[in-house]
Length: 196
Length: 117
Image (tube, rainbow over all chains, first blue to last red):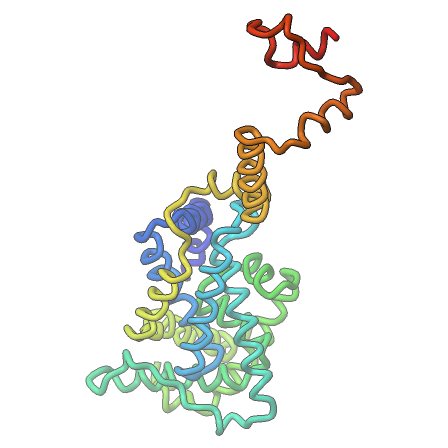
């Protein structure tokens, strides 16, 4: 797994420079920022919430906060994407808390418009199975696992996003992975793993 | 690590890899809304130096006060109220009187006559 991409030393300064250009009124920067950041935010929100409509709401709100803070952004304070992930994670946590005691069966099934009927059914089954298993994890474990293993962030950045120490991140991801394995155990045959 | 654990790790990593390879697709309508928000919220094309100077100066209220003070000062310079010369004399502790000897002098302005008594 390539975890180095998100930690490229120039990425943080590129993001900050783009945000500065946006704040200075550059219309191209607005499109570039939206194009770069929206898929990351939406992807994370989808994995966290497992619901398309809620993920859209969270994404729009998170991006709105980015536009709002742009004029006051100080380079060197934090990485823009880290800050945005933190906002997204907090918005997702708020949503999950509001769901309260809602059972998992009441949560909308994961949707992915990219998956069409022509595409491989096993691939669809694997994506859905992982999402359902993620939905069974406690919020913090789910956040840590998604950030680490799907969003591909390094532990120090995840620690900054979740506002915990690196050791806590390691613990959360380890426990999350163990729980995922248990949740997926009985679906191994259906996912085609028994023959591999 | 047992073989089973090792296999479980491999299978889980395969699921993660599959998820990374097929991220949720951002709906066009949502992207359009995000870009529309960005344009709505975007500051106008003024540069940050101007904004910083403006903010350091105190923003719009301070600028409004400065403009008002400037207008009042200009007005008093052009058409000073009658009370102004008396006030100046009271503050400076001197009295001025018209002196015919100085009429036509080139230095009867700028207060030189007042300073020299």
